[in-house]
Amino acid sequence: MDTVGEQGPFLLVAHSYGGLVARTAATLRPDEVAGMVLVDATSPLVLAPGSPYPDAAEPWPGERGPTDISAVPDLVGNGPDMGSAPVVVLQAGIWDDDSPLAFSDTGEADWEAWQRQAATLSRNAVHGVVVDAGHMIPMHNPDAVVAATTAAAASSRNGNAAMGECPAALGETGVTCPQSQTG
Image (cartoon, rainbow, N blue to C red; front, side):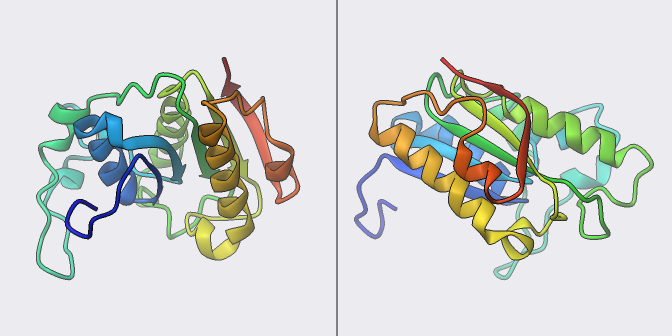
């Protein structure tokens, strides 16, 4: 964003692998991040030493060549600590072949645990399950992503006002909130 002259702070909205990017950006430039919306986002814990997914730390293919993500766990750990900045975590309600750990017998339980953990990044967090969507939430239920982004943006604009247990706009898009933190 510096390169194109945009001024922060920014609300980061990240899907899947983008979760690693967003969490790294928030760790490296906390003053530039106003909040996050993590959409069935990959956790740095999938890459941590002792993870049951050693292949996850291999360089990820990309349009411009492989991306080495092996340093992310050391840099980010379980964080970043977002304080009271808004964080909305949207988790897929349907475990499908697009799910990043679908190949693993424990992948679904691990992924769910990592989504719950992401909802602890802030004291002002909401964890929602998009009941009718698989991993590709932005395609299956884009309204849920818009509602989550709108809730986080409104909180940020209002001094990190508490988003509540489950913002009504999320419920209107088929999201249920099994856990959240506010305050």
